[in-house]
Image (cartoon, rainbow, N blue to C red):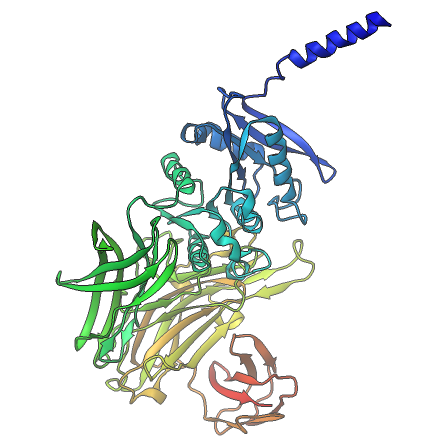
Length: 632
């Protein structure tokens, strides 16, 4: 018995004096059981790892269709992240076996990320105050959600083109806890030619800033939907660890003013934020115009680091007419000279009256569209120069949509024309060339066949944009110009048209009702119904050419207006063959289908909630639209 005790004591002493088992280094795969499956994660540990040192931890989340193993191998072996992230352990969890594998599904799937972090922390000397989260594409969307839900777990967040699924997804506060944005340093980048996500990620960037987020970022030139070059990632890695600039500095977020000026004065506003470490109380701005003339402005107040403020420059007298461009620089902060840098620019159009003779617009990428204004929704789909045309000479403005990629239903993108004088034109009419295809969905991907179609609207204003009246609305088959709609466009490219000239149809809209107006604005609106691809070209206002007008309809009378129980419709000329009613978001609320020509009709309004609606009456190719109000 004595000998046994001595033997056990010797074994225990040996065990306690043996060195701990050496941790694995370099690149390797590991796995953990989670949700009844063994799920892998790719690891990289510096080959010179020492138990005497502490290390940072970078957790990277992969995109759609990828795996943690593949993503980790790419960034470690091809992108060479270890060379720009010294003394950093990296781990890349796998999204699992679900269809999209994005850490959103199944519910609470992101808990696997925490499990991996705990596993690595138990094996290696990881500084728990220096754990960083990174995500690419759909993995970036997951990383954003996780970081905003648990900001205390991470020292910083890197988002490489997070695949936000449209403006509805972006604005879903149940998914993204934006109030926590100030609690985690964040860097966001995206490709300036990533046409799928560049707009929505830019919107995300400004939304985080609006919520006080400690965030930096911007587009990378000539980059699509991919990881940034190593030298860019190196700068990102440095920035996420220290967001502040060393010197006093402000970042201009926007300079805003009305685009088309109907008044004698303009009062621009600079929106800026402090991106230095210390509070700022005075900023000297300079505005430089096209003639290199300089006007100075001084802002006085208090702005803390990352605080956003608006600075109104005061009334500026507008010249009689013309296009104007100015840019702004900050040349001193708190009376200390700083290296001059451009903080923003502004452009506007000022006219004492409208153009004497409206001119056609081709919407070419090379043409001068500075007179037009884009009112963006901040969504993925947006008016832009075409990006799919095979022939470089085939240039036009385009927009696109797809319900698998974008949550955008009910949002609109508007292009607003310069002011045009219709009084100089006999029998004025608006013409616009349109190419459009909507989307159809069905088996084997959906149980039943259905249609998703965006809507093209044209509106006119005679009071300098204060109010607009609709003069054109088409969607679905009425707007379709290609031979067939696009069926089951699973890939984004499958839902885009690449129209030839014969795919464009010319629509003409009579403007006789406005023939005496000397100042009109036109708004071209693309309204999301979650499906479609459109191109527009050759906008012109001139004398009618004899093409059948789309709103050359007989006089329509509605009464009573406002209405409560029912509304009566009376046509004094052509017979009505179809009636549609839309709400102000473009949703069709009532549809007769094809009917025998009628001159009078009564519609029961008992199912309509109080509000403003648009009544569309049709007769063959002609139509008329009128607004009416449903009261209580």
